[in-house]
Image (tube, rainbow, N blue to C red; front, side, top):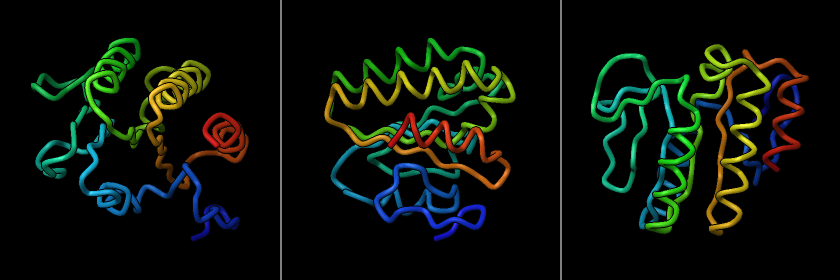
Length: 141
């Protein structure tokens, strides 16, 4: 797998967004918290707790500007059960909140998963510039 001309490590926690299904299938008996822009009807798996990042009103929806609310929901879920966390909406969060607040948010999520011995993955697209991608790597890996 290559990203912007550089290979991603096989065990990398930062993955191309097209590998989301692969992450969701990993460890099928373990629950997953998926923070995503994909609507709920696109992700229907019994072991996935979906947080749909959108500005529309929906039972699974969370506003992209409410990073603190997302953090709280993730923390509560991590306390209740053994789950992995997948952030699949980082570019959208950067658009809505700015790069630095989003990277601080990612850092908090990573720390929460470390405290609970969970896995943390971030999916990215080619739209992320190399400077931000390098900072993200330092935070996540």
